Length: 205
View 1 (cartoon, rainbow, N blue to C red):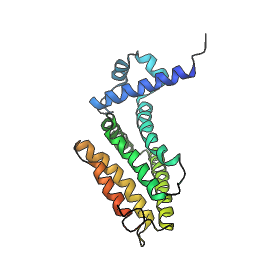
View 2 (view 1 turned 90 degrees about the vertical axis):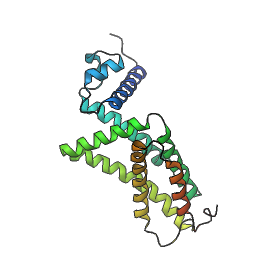
View 3 (view 1 turned 135 degrees about the vertical axis):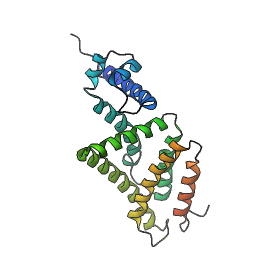
View 4 (view 1 turned 120 degrees about the horizontal axis):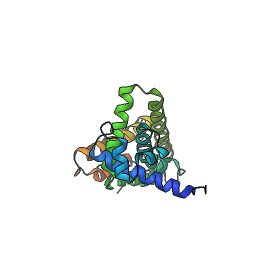
């Protein structure tokens, strides 16, 4: 039997994940079945199970792909020569994703996934989520510390707490957009960035 090209398998997997996200936008992950997702993807249930042996793995893939997109923005680049502008740029890219059509579904999947982990006491996967959040927080902190070293942010701030607050602000903004799609999270981000740079050379705008 000829070997199926890897690119075909990856494309099919991506199509299944997109179909699952569409399904989860209509039903929560508990109510949706693999049969529902198979219909949405135009596959037989048997074909679907060849890619994902159970619904938990498919839900995790939907959440993981969404979370990875955000994390990689912060983890894939080094701190630039203008760290505060670097922070602003990456934050804008991250918040721009909230304007995408699929952002609402991604947030719902995230909440479903997180609540299921908490209800089931799945500490292993919760630890994975905590570790990912810590990696992003450290990437934010690295830029804040570099900015502080050259006087771009106000002195006297506890930078680890600021980094944690910025990560929390992002997730809070996602919830705000979920409950109120008209929430102007871009304007909120701009004001937070302005506050951070209010005493530095990049903040006199």
